[in-house]
Image 1 (tube, rainbow, N blue to C red):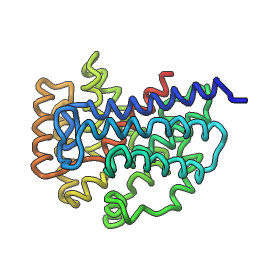
Image 2: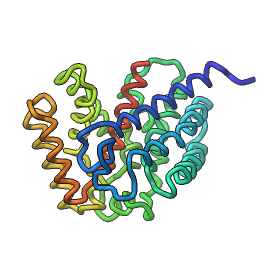
Image 3: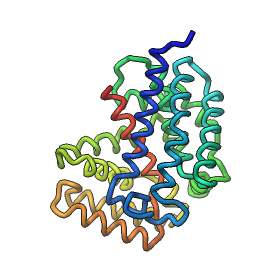
Amino acid sequence: MPNFASDSRAHHIAELAHRALIDELEAWPKPGLVSLVDSGSHRDMDADTLRRSAGAIAPFFAELARAGAEGAPLGDLRRIGLRAEIAMMAATGGINAHKGAIFSLGLICAAAGLAGGEAVSAEDLAERVGALWGPEIARKPASPITHGGRAALRYGVGGAGAEAAAGFPAVRALGLPALRRGRHLAPGHPQAARIECLFALMADLDDTNLLHRGGEEGLRYAQGAAREFLEAGGVGAAGWGDRALAVHHAFVAARLSPGGSADLLAVTLFLDSLAQT
């Protein structure tokens, strides 16, 4: 007999994961990234592509939450994730719009499902991913067939796998504090808080998407631009939107896109929303 309480919880978790992807998409100004305004540095996708992708993978987030609630092993979670990738590719015409998000948000869905109705802080839930599956994730090397995986191998950085295996340390140390700081600096302006969070992640993350597109020079340039924005007061300073927009234009001119930071912005938003339910 189905457990309707747990099924309802799984759907709620999936709705929050989907909402995090849409909130990340709609954040603006967002350097080099696809938004409702333009496609940033991406020539193969736009906002509609990302909306279709997010809608296609949302049911699999519920499936991952249910699998987590049942204590499914990582191998089972991976198989669900692979099915989500197939659905994503079908919805986007073969464009990899959310592979990283399927991995990171999917693991959090499973951890949230396992937690059931227990009240867990955003930081604790992030750490649980590492505690539950970290060693097994860490044993799997970065993929040599994805842009991010190749960049991680070439430049000796951790990438998405290492971040998840360690319980999302960048989200705990950078993303969540910056999201809360942004809410304090610009109360009632959720877009501003998201941009503060994104810039904080960009400033310190060894973003494999930036490494893929711009090498070490591109990564350092992007990190420097983000730090300059934050040191000038971030979203608490007058004219912050114009300064963020200037960074966006510079990134587009250089074809830079901080996709890893964008994925962790979605992770941050998702963890934050889970902690409030």
